[in-house]
Length: 350
Length: 168
Image 1 (cartoon, each protein chain N blue to C red):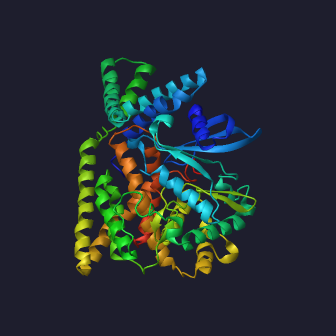
Image 2: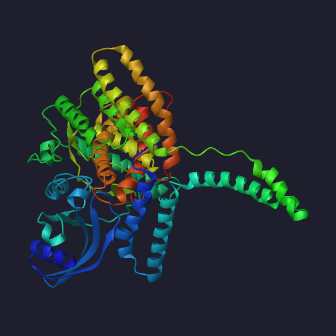
């Protein structure tokens, strides 16, 4: 693998006279890609520099939670880096040919900052930074949502990158085509009848669509584990693989749910601004209501629940024997009471 | 409770994961052997779980009979030892037989069939709801009222608090 990284870097840094890859190791990273880190010692024009790198590699197709495209992710990250002030790690490029790395892969800058976001909450070591970090996180999200779609995505790669049949010619067609995708996907993951709560969610979403809102590029997996921070600021918003055009309320709603599952408190900050939603509304003027937030928590849950439960379903059917899907099944169960609450099941406390 | 995956599926998953995902990365021979021991103990649980309650009940009922048989075999033997044996036969040995646990397989199959029937009701109710049938709204609440305590109990029984491993 190290040799493949060297060959990759030689291609993008043709003036390098020496490239040595050191400290190559796999890291926990997210659940959807295999993630490795290393340092590349690069000599150019007689001067040596150290490039901290992350290699994100697709898992084998059958084991993938999400079938996403490294080239789309690369183009998006670079577009954000060059056209906005949203903090992202530079993407050095991608390799779609599976030969060098075993699967398609991309190499990005390893951004500085801590990814241990749990330290910001519940009396953690960095709780004193929570107010400023989350305030900045909200500002970053607002910049993403306010940026014109064609500025970030001039080639339309984010229209339907997950090939779900999503239409984005209007807010209604986006919502309808997405809910249709949820409905037709249900039979691919109802390995146990308790998942009928997801079916109830699909129908509930269709019966109760909220007011329209202009579509935007959404992060798509805006959760407490997908940012790095240092010195009271977000140093990078990471893991852009499911970014696409959508309703901006999706990112907020997904964060609400992941806050619950992750035992974090992003939505409670910045406290001086009355919390994340209040500050977001102040910056955007969108006046998103708690009811709309609830709707998009359910909607965002289904956006992720479909591929995640399909991943679990394939494991339950023994198409592969990884441990992760069984763990994901356990840890995602915590979403069920939250979904019940959002649908108004009687007697569910907040 | 979920009927799929089964508890046995989960235990099998632990053994396979140790074999394929953990042991290849274990450098220490001692730790490697410990992994093999863990696999063996998990396999013990897999083998015992389906028969454990049945065997315990069977053995309970057999032991009361044995206590009575032992006392009967002594006939009119005298002495403190024989007296103690007869006492055990008339106390512990007269405990009522415990019922044998029901075979769980058909119960789980029926449970799953009923669950999918409720799922299909949700689909039919949605059609009625969208046609403006308000009774369907009420009917859906009956299913939800059943589901809610189940999922709350499942979460309390099956999940761990404290966030997701490997997610910051």
